[in-house]
Amino acid sequence: MSDDDIPRGYGSLGGDGADHHDTVKTKVVAEGVTNQLRCDRCGRPLLLTIPWAELIFLSQGVLPPNGSWKHEAHNGVFMPNQQAPCCRDDIRLGITPDECTRHIKSGIAAGKISALAVQEYLVQTQGPRR
Image (cartoon, rainbow, N blue to C red; front, side, top):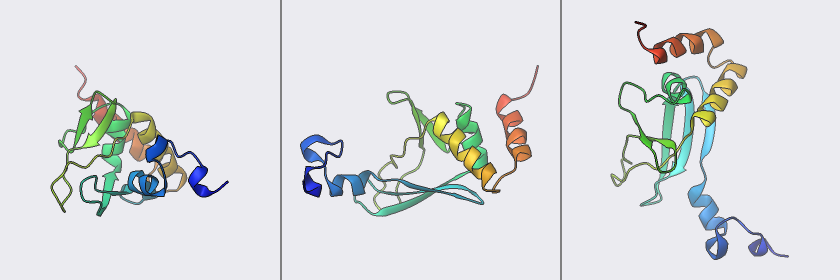
């Protein structure tokens, strides 16, 4: 069996090219989580960093107040409210609240953010109490 015979999840359109195009590499850093992906239109590499505060809002299913994200109801994901600098196409990176929670737990475990800081941001997502 050759590598070409291994199913990749894209049917007859599968293969290394499709996998390369749809791959997102994430890394926990001091500022938040970086995402390396390729532009859907031109294929150029993109680097998108999601700050901790935004991750925490998104983990609660709440849009950050700065307008940096939008909710895409069809797929049930949050997407950055940004365009690729290379061709001005919308950046198509979908992230769920569960994924954000996993990233936050990884950040705490790696010492990139403290559990106390996460709790302080969580209070902000609740808004003012009446």
